[in-house]
Length: 197
Image (cartoon, rainbow, N blue to C red; front, top):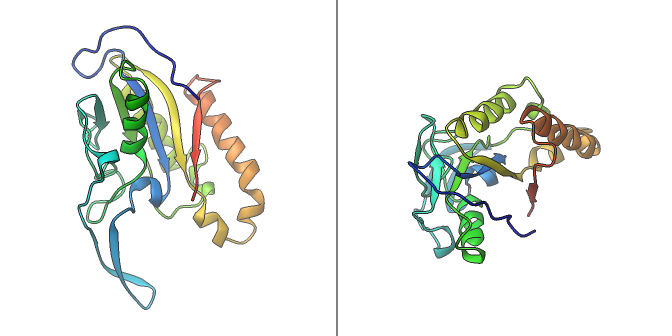
């Protein structure tokens, strides 16, 4: 799908910002390059190796909506402060934004809004839940002073493979999540980009 061009100037990281929401589980939160020491099924130590491939390098035309709900220059790890503190790593957000700008240098300034939560099943993303309400709240606040929500980048599913009966209900629950999200953001045609391994 080719990004639609939006005319207008960018001012103070806010006006005409092209906003993408980043949600899902640990792969979206950033598990790339994270090395874990596990003993008896418990993570005892984890650290990110700090390596940033060229596809994920900072770009002055990519901003991040941080945990304090302020726009800043985006850099890895994007989900730092949102869900993870000690061992965030690489997720797909920066590569996604850089690819858009590579294909269309006139696309404008991209604002990434990280909202991922590692290790939680789809049932935890229901309307009224903490992750869901945080996603909606951050999305609305991110465009409060200008900008448009252009899409959701969703990377999720592993926890639901482990839970009994969760995988058989995944499709219907996911469709409901997407419907509720579009409804609550008043964006019935919001594009959703679903990642998978």
